[in-house]
Amino acid sequence: MTTIEEGRVVIVGSGLIGCSWAMVFASGGYQVKLYDIVQEQVTKALTKISEQMKELEKIGMLKGTLNAKQQLSLISGCTDLKAAVEGAIYVQECTPENLDLKKKIFGQLDLIVSNTVILGSSTSCLLPTKLFTGLKHVKQCIVAHPVNPPYYVPLVELVPHPETDPCVLEKTYALMKKIGQSPVRLTKEIDGFVLNRLQYAIISEAWRLAGDGIISPVDLDLVMSDGLGMRYAFMGPLETMHLNAEGMLNYCERYREGIIRVLKSFGPIPDFAGETEEKINVAMCEETPADSEHLNARRHWRDNCLVRLAKLKKEIKSEDLHHH
Image 1 (cartoon, rainbow, N blue to C red):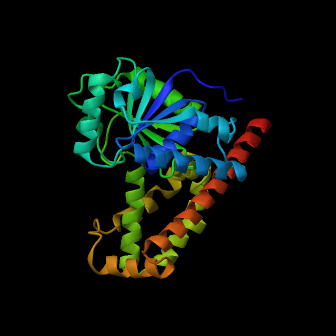
Image 2 (cartoon, rainbow, N blue to C red):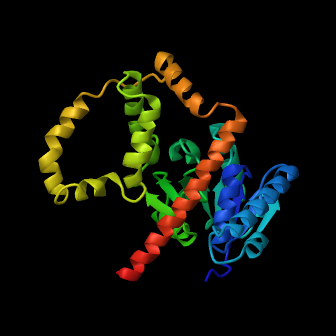
């Protein structure tokens, strides 16, 4: 049973990611202040959240144990940052991916926050040293990078600044777990964090294979969606190795040489431009034309699939718990 939790959470920025975070925290029973500079923006965001929650409740996919009405009552808007952070335990910054803008926000927060509140950033590619260095509350700062859309995809990458207090990392980890997300800890910052580094490794080989005409762009995507991706939705590459032989040591012994041979044949880093870009673009646009109507319809389809996959994974998890 989700109870109403002590302590308030502040979301800075009421765009898509900000709204998702607000819904995730409310589903965990936290009071949420959604801050933005313009009242109209905040009002629009709250309306959107309300529609989405009611829709999710209707299809039985609302997170948490509180109903939509109870969750909505936990979320309120705010256009005064100082008032918003008063007494907050956690702040999640969700402004556009622009270093100067984010630094400005953290500079403002630095002047008004307590010594106990945790300051998290949703940034997907700005390093903690770029964002937080020089703040007096740097010990309380951490990157908490969600995956789009966070409401259905639970992963959160936690990336500390070299000066982040270890207990801030642990507290953020516990908080993310509590609201039903899947946090992972990085021991230190690295360009691209982990999710994007893995994603870019796949993208670059996909680009080379399609560019070299080994396989069509559409078939390449099928290799992932109907092949690797089905496995990867339930277990990672390392456990996959472990199970694909008699354990990890046996896998390495059997396949080490072959893997190294194939990896040596990988081409150089693509420039993601020119002829291959044109070819892949044409193939993608045949499937989904690049106008907002078609793209949004396809995104809607994708999110709907993610909802159902999330539901399935949840059912599998609870069955596993009952069997063990």
